[in-house]
Amino acid sequence: MPQSLNKIYVHIIFSTKNREPLILDSVKEELFNYLGGVCQNLECNPIQVGGYRDHVHILCLLSKKITLVKLLEEIKSSSSKWIKTKDEKLSNFYWQSGYGAFSVNPTEIEVVTNYVKNQEEHHKVKSFQDEYRTFLKKYDVQYNEDYVWD
Image (cartoon, rainbow, N blue to C red; front, side, top):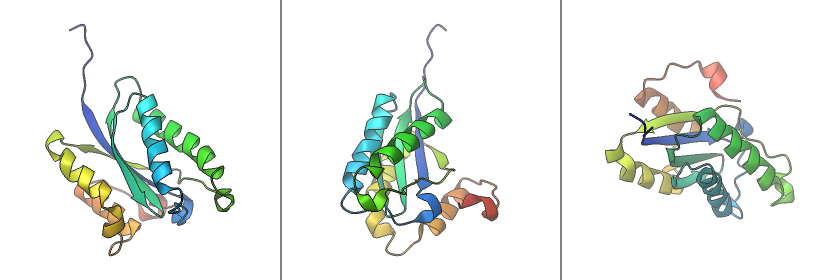
């Protein structure tokens, strides 16, 4: 077969370093648009980007031309540099070194899209750590609590 074909939906989650609440209301929509733009520029079609004060969620279609780790490297490094220029309070902004990436069934795209859109409501009752542990459990990911958070 001469063609390389794929359709891989991925739900990416990562937090600010030490889960600092640095995603300010004044920049969050612009940040989410920026993250989506980075994905788009790398041919990873963004479906929904959102998050809360200390973390982001990106639902995108992974391009066949880039590895997941390269996508995350580009997203994090460019957005970290960019956000530092937006507000003096963000001059020490950093993302955590790790991330979570979870496959999404095409039949569940709408469910995940709505989940990402509703982060503000969701986090009125659940912390990022509890949310993330839920994903790790749902996907049966083995992890050591000592190394998940930085």
